[in-house]
Length: 193
Image (cartoon, rainbow, N blue to C red):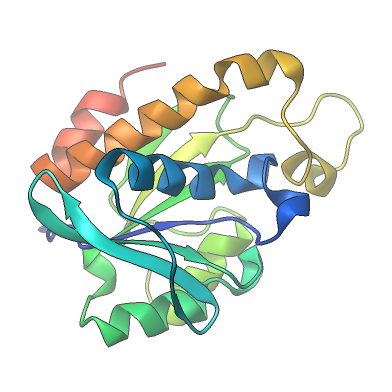
């Protein structure tokens, strides 16, 4: 598969203050980090999605955060993509991943949903999984804690100390993917434990 230039970067999360600093919202956090560094306010509205247009390393991009809940994020994202004439292959999705240890980043060119409801919604909406992803490890819960409670829970104080570095790493990975392509991003970031 010949990867196209990324034109749309989508961070997955849940809207509302109650979810703002939860593990499930790391995708939103990376969009905020990109928004800050490149002065791209993510404030324009389409149905159930906030977005901003700007440039990263001289390339035109759209940053977006779906405002439907995680498991319904696909349809508003597809609506935005269609409005701007962007295909799924030109999209990068940033999301949490319970199957990766905390602090691990993994970039994929395409794939299935792996049980992630946000990615399942994206695949359903676009009709395929041919979009790049940055998966941010949030680890599995210790002991008998439910998976839902874990992903919707806040980071521990030890994790919080390292969270900004994790978000910066994912932000930098997104910049590399936009400027140098998905393969370069995979080469640089997938080997780091």
